Image (cartoon, rainbow, N blue to C red; front, side, top):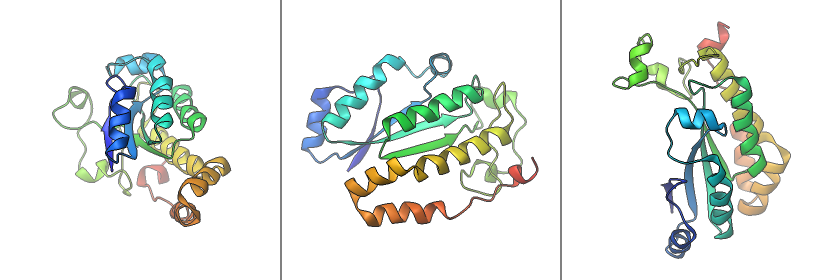
Length: 190
Protein backbone atom coordinates (compact mmCIF):
# COMPACT_ATOMS: atom_id res chain seq x y z
CA UNK A 1 0.00 0.00 0.00
CA UNK A 2 1.22 3.54 -0.68
CA UNK A 3 0.06 7.13 -0.30
CA UNK A 4 0.99 10.71 -0.92
CA UNK A 5 2.11 12.86 2.01
CA UNK A 6 3.18 16.44 2.55
CA UNK A 7 6.54 17.23 4.08
CA UNK A 8 4.95 19.78 6.41
CA UNK A 9 2.28 17.44 7.82
CA UNK A 10 4.12 14.17 8.49
CA UNK A 11 5.47 13.13 11.90
CA UNK A 12 6.98 10.03 13.46
CA UNK A 13 3.75 9.02 15.25
CA UNK A 14 1.81 9.11 11.98
CA UNK A 15 4.56 7.20 10.15
CA UNK A 16 4.51 4.46 12.81
CA UNK A 17 0.73 4.14 12.47
CA UNK A 18 0.93 4.08 8.66
CA UNK A 19 3.57 1.34 8.68
CA UNK A 20 1.56 -0.68 11.20
CA UNK A 21 -1.44 -0.79 8.85
CA UNK A 22 0.68 -1.83 5.87
CA UNK A 23 1.85 1.43 4.31
CA UNK A 24 5.13 0.58 2.62
CA UNK A 25 5.53 3.53 0.23
CA UNK A 26 5.05 7.28 0.62
CA UNK A 27 5.30 9.72 -2.24
CA UNK A 28 6.50 13.18 -1.20
CA UNK A 29 6.16 16.17 -3.49
CA UNK A 30 9.59 17.67 -2.86
CA UNK A 31 9.37 19.59 -6.17
CA UNK A 32 12.79 21.32 -5.91
CA UNK A 33 15.82 21.59 -3.68
CA UNK A 34 16.32 25.31 -4.28
CA UNK A 35 14.90 27.44 -1.47
CA UNK A 36 13.93 30.47 -3.57
CA UNK A 37 12.20 28.29 -6.16
CA UNK A 38 10.38 26.41 -3.39
CA UNK A 39 9.12 29.71 -1.96
CA UNK A 40 8.03 30.85 -5.42
CA UNK A 41 5.79 27.79 -5.85
CA UNK A 42 4.34 28.24 -2.34
CA UNK A 43 4.78 24.62 -1.21
CA UNK A 44 4.28 25.56 2.45
CA UNK A 45 7.41 24.02 3.95
CA UNK A 46 11.08 24.91 4.30
CA UNK A 47 13.97 22.89 2.89
CA UNK A 48 15.38 22.32 6.37
CA UNK A 49 12.38 20.06 7.12
CA UNK A 50 13.16 17.67 4.28
CA UNK A 51 16.13 15.75 5.70
CA UNK A 52 14.27 15.04 8.95
CA UNK A 53 11.17 13.77 7.13
CA UNK A 54 13.28 11.52 4.91
CA UNK A 55 15.13 10.08 7.91
CA UNK A 56 11.90 9.50 9.87
CA UNK A 57 10.32 7.75 6.90
CA UNK A 58 13.32 5.53 6.27
CA UNK A 59 13.67 4.76 10.00
CA UNK A 60 10.11 3.38 9.94
CA UNK A 61 10.95 1.10 7.00
CA UNK A 62 8.81 2.98 4.50
CA UNK A 63 10.12 3.43 0.96
CA UNK A 64 10.07 6.88 -0.61
CA UNK A 65 8.92 7.95 -4.03
CA UNK A 66 10.39 11.42 -4.48
CA UNK A 67 8.35 13.64 -6.80
CA UNK A 68 10.33 16.53 -8.27
CA UNK A 69 9.68 19.09 -10.97
CA UNK A 70 12.15 20.32 -13.56
CA UNK A 71 11.31 23.62 -15.19
CA UNK A 72 9.68 25.65 -12.44
CA UNK A 73 9.48 29.30 -13.50
CA UNK A 74 12.47 30.54 -11.43
CA UNK A 75 14.72 27.59 -12.30
CA UNK A 76 17.88 27.70 -14.33
CA UNK A 77 20.17 24.77 -15.14
CA UNK A 78 22.05 25.11 -11.83
CA UNK A 79 18.80 24.85 -9.85
CA UNK A 80 17.68 21.79 -11.80
CA UNK A 81 21.10 20.19 -11.19
CA UNK A 82 20.69 20.82 -7.44
CA UNK A 83 17.38 18.98 -7.51
CA UNK A 84 18.92 16.09 -9.43
CA UNK A 85 21.82 16.00 -6.94
CA UNK A 86 19.26 15.89 -4.10
CA UNK A 87 17.75 12.73 -5.65
CA UNK A 88 21.18 11.13 -6.00
CA UNK A 89 22.20 12.04 -2.45
CA UNK A 90 19.21 10.23 -0.95
CA UNK A 91 19.13 7.44 -3.56
CA UNK A 92 15.35 7.11 -3.26
CA UNK A 93 13.73 3.81 -4.17
CA UNK A 94 11.77 5.68 -6.83
CA UNK A 95 11.81 9.20 -8.21
CA UNK A 96 9.17 10.76 -10.42
CA UNK A 97 10.79 13.52 -12.46
CA UNK A 98 8.21 15.71 -14.08
CA UNK A 99 8.65 18.68 -16.35
CA UNK A 100 6.28 21.51 -15.53
CA UNK A 101 3.07 21.72 -17.52
CA UNK A 102 0.83 24.77 -17.33
CA UNK A 103 -2.83 23.81 -17.46
CA UNK A 104 -5.84 25.86 -18.61
CA UNK A 105 -7.44 27.77 -15.77
CA UNK A 106 -4.18 28.36 -13.89
CA UNK A 107 -2.59 31.75 -13.52
CA UNK A 108 0.57 30.91 -15.51
CA UNK A 109 -1.54 29.63 -18.41
CA UNK A 110 -2.71 33.16 -19.14
CA UNK A 111 0.92 34.20 -19.77
CA UNK A 112 1.75 31.59 -22.41
CA UNK A 113 0.56 30.63 -25.84
CA UNK A 114 -2.09 27.93 -25.49
CA UNK A 115 -0.98 24.54 -26.81
CA UNK A 116 -2.56 23.35 -30.04
CA UNK A 117 -3.25 19.90 -28.63
CA UNK A 118 -3.60 18.05 -25.33
CA UNK A 119 -0.87 15.75 -26.65
CA UNK A 120 1.69 18.34 -25.52
CA UNK A 121 0.85 17.35 -21.91
CA UNK A 122 1.74 13.67 -22.42
CA UNK A 123 4.89 13.19 -20.32
CA UNK A 124 6.18 10.24 -22.32
CA UNK A 125 4.62 11.27 -25.62
CA UNK A 126 6.31 12.30 -28.82
CA UNK A 127 4.58 15.69 -28.83
CA UNK A 128 5.37 16.53 -25.17
CA UNK A 129 6.10 20.23 -24.66
CA UNK A 130 6.56 21.37 -21.06
CA UNK A 131 6.47 24.98 -19.94
CA UNK A 132 9.57 27.10 -20.37
CA UNK A 133 11.20 28.85 -17.43
CA UNK A 134 12.37 32.41 -17.03
CA UNK A 135 15.80 31.16 -18.16
CA UNK A 136 15.29 28.00 -20.22
CA UNK A 137 13.34 26.93 -23.28
CA UNK A 138 10.84 24.08 -23.22
CA UNK A 139 13.31 21.93 -25.15
CA UNK A 140 16.08 22.58 -22.61
CA UNK A 141 13.77 21.61 -19.74
CA UNK A 142 12.61 18.41 -21.43
CA UNK A 143 16.13 17.41 -22.46
CA UNK A 144 17.33 17.89 -18.88
CA UNK A 145 14.40 15.89 -17.49
CA UNK A 146 14.90 12.99 -19.87
CA UNK A 147 18.66 12.85 -19.24
CA UNK A 148 18.16 13.11 -15.46
CA UNK A 149 15.67 10.23 -15.56
CA UNK A 150 18.02 7.98 -17.52
CA UNK A 151 21.06 8.93 -15.44
CA UNK A 152 19.30 8.41 -12.11
CA UNK A 153 18.00 4.93 -12.89
CA UNK A 154 21.21 3.71 -14.53
CA UNK A 155 23.53 4.57 -11.60
CA UNK A 156 25.30 1.50 -10.21
CA UNK A 157 24.57 2.51 -6.60
CA UNK A 158 20.87 2.80 -7.40
CA UNK A 159 20.77 -0.55 -9.18
CA UNK A 160 22.62 -2.27 -6.31
CA UNK A 161 20.14 -0.84 -3.80
CA UNK A 162 17.17 -1.94 -5.91
CA UNK A 163 18.52 -5.45 -6.28
CA UNK A 164 19.19 -5.77 -2.55
CA UNK A 165 15.70 -4.51 -1.58
CA UNK A 166 13.51 -5.84 -4.38
CA UNK A 167 15.49 -8.55 -6.17
CA UNK A 168 17.22 -9.10 -9.47
CA UNK A 169 13.94 -9.19 -11.42
CA UNK A 170 13.14 -5.60 -10.43
CA UNK A 171 16.64 -4.46 -11.33
CA UNK A 172 16.36 -6.17 -14.72
CA UNK A 173 12.96 -4.56 -15.31
CA UNK A 174 14.47 -1.11 -14.74
CA UNK A 175 17.34 -1.90 -17.09
CA UNK A 176 14.86 -2.99 -19.79
CA UNK A 177 12.87 0.22 -19.22
CA UNK A 178 16.02 2.26 -19.84
CA UNK A 179 16.55 0.55 -23.20
CA UNK A 180 13.41 2.20 -24.63
CA UNK A 181 14.41 5.65 -25.85
CA UNK A 182 11.79 8.38 -25.73
CA UNK A 183 11.09 10.03 -29.05
CA UNK A 184 10.55 13.79 -28.70
CA UNK A 185 9.59 16.08 -31.54
CA UNK A 186 10.73 19.18 -29.67
CA UNK A 187 14.20 17.70 -29.19
CA UNK A 188 14.52 16.75 -32.85
CA UNK A 189 14.04 20.38 -33.77
CA UNK A 190 16.57 21.78 -31.29
